[in-house]
Image 1: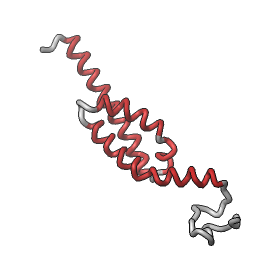
Image 2: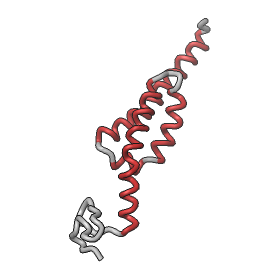
Image 3: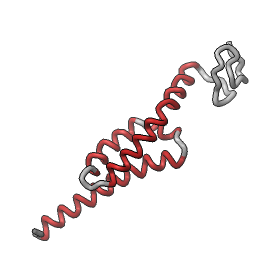
Image 4: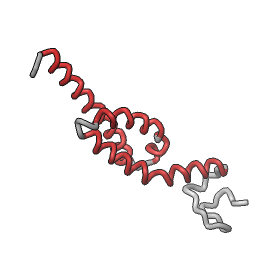
Length: 113
């Protein structure tokens, strides 16, 4: 039994982020989110890189949208700058994709060679 006000377990040495009592399930979920942060941060930079290139932007837009939805809880726990990079990466990929589609349609309508 760990005291409710404890921020460190005297038996195993585990530190808690707050003195607020939480169930073991909540603690495990928080630890899982915490362990996934570095991977999500790295994936967001890769997504941004692929979104900047015209040829890979459509793939990055579709995959990035699904990735963003699947990792919402981890993204919400990141620093504001890191979570902004995630949103910007998906936005840039979609913007690039829209520009490519508009240019292709205009090219087809105007009969460019």
